[in-house]
Image (cartoon, rainbow, N blue to C red; front, side, top):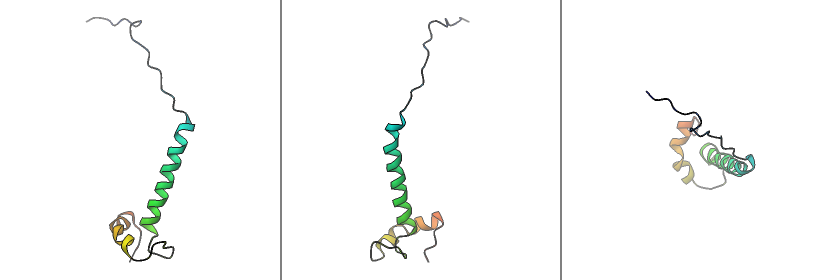
Length: 71
């Protein structure tokens, strides 16, 4: 069994990701999550922005899956 030469193995430096580059993506993800939760949980209720029942029918099963009451 041969020994590895420790001088021949390169050291791996961790990659640093600046927070300033991640902040816009985090904000976008949070905004998208809020919009999705609104449409699944509150649309077609007291705070409805869209008239009719189309949105309710599109997200009906998602409401039950996430535990939001709808009827």
